[in-house]
Image (cartoon, rainbow, N blue to C red; front, side):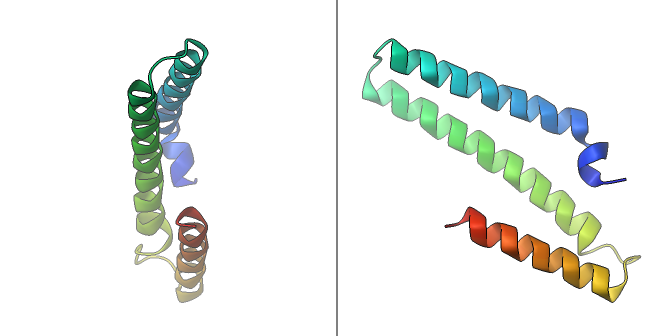
Length: 91
């Protein structure tokens, strides 16, 4: 079982909060709120996304890289997958 399946409800709760934040951002833009308020909402969304990403990365490392019960090839594959994701994320 994948770690994302085990943590499904917690991850989905985070996603729902992010959806609420993005909906609030859309409403603020529609209402022509000030740029300061818009920037704060964008920063909050970015923080929430970063928190979600951090949580999934931590679990990935624990279950696909650092787990001593894994074989060497599985650990290398887990590390390579993580490196690819991080490269994409920081672009």
